[in-house]
Image (cartoon, rainbow, N blue to C red; front, side):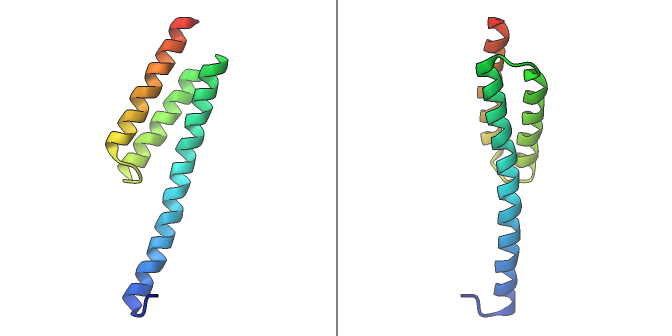
Length: 89
């Protein structure tokens, strides 16, 4: 348990940041599921949803919620699947 004022403030800041980071991660994970679902069902608007996903990943990486290489890996793997889905059409 934190005793000093500064330690208590750090606990409050950590809670706020953790909540914010969780929201950002939840957003891009939901978008990943949406894009993968569109790939499997060959739904319309795949390119638009993929661009939205790339934006969320870039934002998460720029805010240091996730590492930039992690964002790059997500983009590379999903873009390969999007490209393969486009060829199959």
